[in-house]
Each structure stands twice: as structure tokens, then as C-alpha cells.
Amino acid sequence: MKLFKDIFARVWAFWGLISFIGTFLIILIPSLLTALIPDPKGMGYFIQLARLWMNTWLFMIGCPVSVRGKIHFKKGQTYIVTCNHNSLLDIPLSSPFIPGANQTIAKKEFTKIPLFGWYYERGSVIVDRKSDASRRKSYELMKAALQKGFHMCIYPEGTRNRTSAPLKQFYDGAFKLAADSGYSIIPAVILNTKKALPANRFFYLMPHPLAIHFLEPVEVNGQSAAVLKELVYNKMAEHYLKHTN
Image (cartoon, rainbow, N blue to C red; front, top):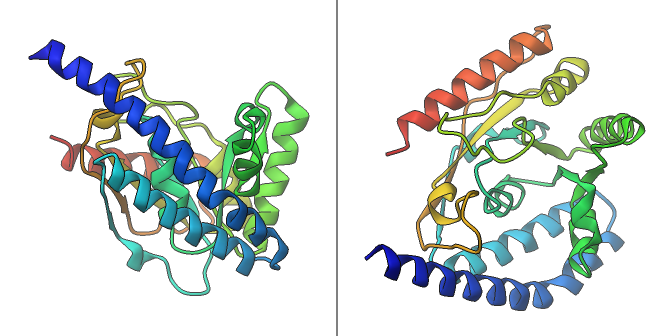
């Protein structure tokens, strides 16, 4: 049974890759053309197209998405959204399903992928983690994105969680950004991506329903980055454990 499951998962991963590329090529030009529309409206259209693409592709690979908590995004307000990170599938579940225009802090390496790099850069604040100057610049770009009315999507764990713990230790960046800017934090918990596309398995994909839950905002109210980090970590860990079986 395990052998059959492993073979199926590799075949399904091939289907996932082919269908991803095919649907991406369809959506690429319309998505890039949104750059001609002034922001934040242009970025809003970009996110809507990304949501259409991801809903289609995730359905095709047997990983339909359910979204809870969109009510927490108040009209006219901008938020810092913190997401947990277990799998490469977390990326299709974060930015496209955040209500409204948003950008994601993202590593430079993905910009080198032909064609996809253009798309990736359009929706992201790019950072070279090996460069202090790049990290400082990305921080200023995130503040600028918030001022434009974009939500900022950040993975405070930094990299995928390969441990048995619900969350890895958080980095300070998202919470320093909140403390400095005053923008509230909406914690987001992504569920079941570890079951569909585990980080510790090579070229492995299994159909499984996925979910993203947006939790109640954490207001800054003059609190330090350290206090905000602890509050958000505890809320996300508790919710993750409650909804994971």
C-alpha cells in the first residue's frame, strides 16, 4: 500500500507540475499587464487574477481551498498578514487569498526562474537574505507598500517548518514593521499543506483539501515588537493545534 501511494504521489506531482506550467502560461500576460494600471487598483487586479489561477490549479490537482475569517479585513484598512510555513503550497494559499491588494516578502532566488521570475517580482518585495543592504532596502519597501494601501504578507518563520512543532521560532521583522508603522497584524494559519506537499519528500504530491484561516487582528497599541511576536505566535500555534488532526 505504501509503495502504491509513493508511486501515485510521484505521478501526481508530475501532473501538478505540468498543469501549473500550463495554467501559468495562460495567466502570465494578463497578469503582467496589470502593471499598466495605477496602484493599488492595478495590484488588486493582479491578485484577483492570481486567485482565479490558484483556484483553478488547486482544483485540478485535487487540493481545493476553503477560506475563513475574511471578515477581519475591514474596508479601507491595511494589515500585516503573518502566515505559517510548512510547504511550497503555502505560497499559493497566502497572497492570492488575502482580500485586496497585497505583496509578499520573497527571496531573490525565485526571480531567476525564466518567465515566472517576472510574475513573482510583480507581486513581491524581493530580498537577498545574504545582503544587509538588501534587507534594509526590503524593509523600507515593505513600509512603502503599506503606505500605498497594500497588505504585506510575511512568513515570520522564514523558511519551511520541517520540525514536529506547530511553528518554528519567529523572526522579528514582521513585528518590528508593525511596531514601527502602527499597522495591525492579522495572523493567518494555513492548514494541510504539509499533508499534500511535505517539505521532506522529493517530488511528492497528494490530493488533499487545504485551508487558510484569518484570525482576529492584533492591534499594535504601542506594544513592542517582542510583545507582538509573542502574542501572534501563541494565537497561531493554538489555532494550528486546534485544527490539525
